[in-house]
Image (cartoon, rainbow, N blue to C red; front, side):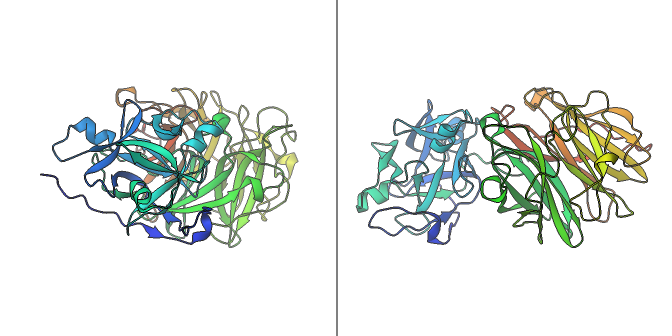
Length: 466
């Protein structure tokens, strides 16, 4: 006997987000992210499933094999080509995409064609609570079942076509059994902070070949488990005049009643050297605007290293310090306006083993300087740390605190940030890893684990968890 599947209600939003040039009205819809299964509207009990990397519409029941249930379960994530649309990731780390108008499950290559082929924009389906999925790069085509195979077909204004191309998103046949990633989809270099008593997460948008993303999103939570997606807060294309590419490693600081977003950026062509910028907003979730209209740190301003991976630490006395750099770590005290500094006061603080991603915090009067070692494309990407008596050191290396855990498939653990739970001495570390199970250095996901201290103040090795 087939069990009933609980329906996850979809919310309609403004129609302006999508334009479909047909007789029917276009109504955009939002989808719930996370693990879901997709049931056909007119073939009850049949679900979108991938078999031998091809998309099919197959029956799934409570008595179906575990593999069948896994093949009919997808994680709805931020669209690989657009944050206003969606992509669908299999439990094996592949993505649904169209090729030759056939729906397939394939590995993300990160190039623009794949990302567009694997992105779908939802519109209202043929019945209440259902959606149709239009192709991002062929907006006049929709995912449709024909002879129980899944195709990308040209829209037809008929009741039969609308029914064949409508699906309900329901509870997953194979619910996720792991706690991570904390936000669905491909995100890296997470900066976590507590602002106004709430946790905020600012990551790099991942999944692009050569890390060629262009925008940043913000997420917030009260419990580090359930996260709200606040959408795009800064887009290099329209919002930053001097960078249209390489939107990397955002970090947020608050001062003067405002919020400052520090970020790395570069040009997609010509001189592609990376530079650092700063944007400002009246809210932790933006919208942010470029505070200077030019880089905060130019690519040629300091010799040695690459100008990426900014981070700001504010001490108990209200003084703020900017840290940055790949290859060479630098630090400088910011002026009170948070957008300027005395370049003559910048100092090199590179520790042994340093590659990138500096992070500084303070606990019980002691300063901690953390960083990532090895290349982000390596499974050996990891986090090490040092301690010192001031925000600028001198620093004493203490060792590695976070690294891969191959027995459970966790690789490339790095580019982290840490946060203290309000009113406590409970600390958490946010970091990225290769997306489990099929990720790599450009397909990464963000997770959070506890970070604990020994009685002498040294950090205990963090055991990365699934």
